[in-house]
Image (cartoon, rainbow, N blue to C red; front, top):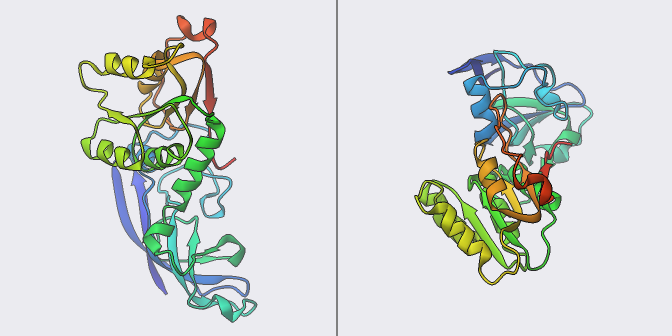
Length: 280
């Protein structure tokens, strides 16, 4: 049969290629894709040619094994229906809706142990966000929010909003989010943020400082998440974090460099930078 597959042909160019796909092997199933979600942060690095040298695509996902090179198929949030099964596969898999860490392809082959059945009450669009939610849970666990802490989240994309929603379930003293897009800030408030600020506002730093100092003996945030994808936001995170505070870096910058100011408060105030990566 023939399938369609999205390929990053070279920096700045994406194509849809037609490929031959054989039937499933005895221990495989054939899946027809219903939804294939875009990982905006990582896929923009691929699109722009900002993938760092010497880093494999993803050693944890069989469909993304190997070194990075163009042309490349990338993606890891696919939901589809099992349409064919190999001779060794139980017929229970036929017509089952499943999630897979797989690139953007109209059809693909997979071992059943690499598939996650989607509950009948969950629609395919919701299921496609499961890797984002997995990432958000991992970020919050790495941050370890405590009762009564003041928390700031830079970046309210999909992962940032999910992190905000999880943090809103904790008994925090203050939950503040930061994003330049008004629509994201509106959704952030719906997800449970106490305040959501625009970093481009002239009084942004002053407003954030006032919010973090309100009713507190120690100024600054206890915990900051940098999820904007912008390395410059790390210095803003360093500016707003307080004594013995911690900054969880969930953004992946690729070849973008982070020019950090670590010569001021960083050492004397015992600030910690924490990397977070769900695949490990």
